[in-house]
Image (cartoon, rainbow, N blue to C red):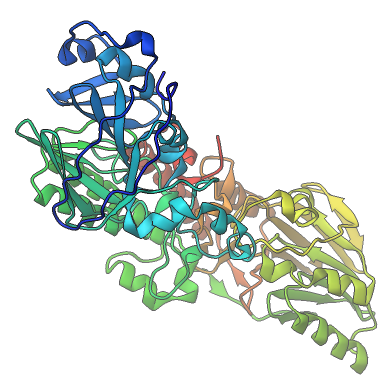
Length: 557
C-alpha cells in the first residue's frame, strides 16, 4: 500500500505565477521493497480491466470512487487531482505507479481532502487555491472561533476540515504547471465555494477540466446548500441558492476555454460541456424562480427581491389585519394579556423585552407574569430567556423539538444558535392542549422556518389565533436558509405546516417579526402548497437524488 516505506522531508516548492515547472524529485518507492522489480505493463490495459477506472488519454485516467480522482502519470510516478477517501491509492500499484508526486485540490471541502495524511507521509506535495489556504492550514483556528459556533448567520465556508492540512503550493487564476506530458492551467471558478478553482489539463491533444463540484452531470448539480450566499447586503442566512449564477458564470468560463471534457469531483464525466451547462442553467433558473415565488423576503425586502429576478413575483399575498387589543408586540416577542392582567410571553431575545415587562408591571397594566412560551431556538428569540426566567420566576414551556435544542445547545450546530442554556419546565407534545386564564392553548410541532420549530393556537375572545414563530409572512415561506433544515415533500416541512393551517383555519396568523397579523385564505395556502410540489418535481431533475432533501439539507442522511 502507498505510504508503507520511509518518509521524506519536504521542502515547500517555489510559488511561481503564470508558468511554473517544478522539477519532481525521485524519492524512495512508496510500495513495499519486495515489489522493486515489476514486470512490463500497459496503462491502457490495466485501466480497461478495472471498472473503477476510466481512461481519458494515454497519460490520464480517472478513479471513480467516493470522489472522482484524476491520475496523471508518467512512468512510475503520478500527480493526482482530488483525493477523496484515499481509495485511489490502492489502485495505483496494479497500474505500475509506485509513488505520488503531488495532489492538487479544487476546493477545501473535507470529502475531497480528508485523507490527505495518507500521501503526506510518503513525501507528496499538496496544491490548493490560494484563496482557501487558511481553510486547509488553519482549520483548527476556524473551529476554535466562537463566531463559527454561536450566533452564526454566515455559511460560507462550510464543510471545513476538522484537522489542519499543510499546503506546499497555492494557485491563483492564470497559474500554469508543467508536469511530464501535461500542462495544467488554473482557472478561478467560484460558485460551489468562494475560492474554488478548475484545473485545465492539456494532455495527449485534449483539454480536460477538473471542475470541482460546479456540476454533477448533464443538467445536474450535486446539492444546493453549498450555494447559500447573501445578496444585496444581506447575510448568507438570507441567501438560499443565491450563488447559482456564479456557478454558471464559472462553467461558462471553462466552456470558453475550450475544455473538451468536464470531470466533476462528484458525478459523471461529461463529454458535451456546452449541452450539460445549458441544461443546468435552465434547471437552476427554473428552481430559483419557483423558490422566489413563495419567499417571505418579498414582505421584508421587495426591492432586493426584484433585483434577483425581473420576472419572479409572489404567488400569493395575504392581507394584514388590525391587532386585537389584548395583544402586545415588542421585538420578536408577542404578549397575551388576560382579562385579569396576567401575561403570557412568547420568546425573549433581548433585555428590551424584560425592560418592557418591568414597565408594564410598574404601571399596573400587568399584574403578574404567568408563563413564557418558546416558538423556536434562534438566538433572537431565546438569548435573554435565562435572565427573564430569573427575573420573573415564571415557568418556561416548549414543544419537544424546540426543548431538545434550547436545553442543550452545546450538542447542536445550527444557524443562529445561542449559547444560552434554557431550563424548560414543561415539555409539550404535538397537539397537546391546556387552559391558561380565559384562553385555550394548543401546541404544535411546526417545522417551517426550521425543523426545530413550534406553533401555538390560542382560542379566546371569539378568535382563533395562530402564532407561527418566524415560519410565514404575508408573502409566503421563511425557508431562505437551508441549514435550518427546511425539508421538502408531502407531509413534511412546509407542506406539513400548510396542511395544518388548512385544518386549523385560524382567523389570524402572527409572525414574531411582523407587527400586524395576517390572514391567508385557502387560495393562498393552496398556491404555496402547489408551488412546493412543483419545486420537488424540478429538484428531482436537477439533483441526482430520488429524495431531493439530500440535495437541500446538509445534515447527514
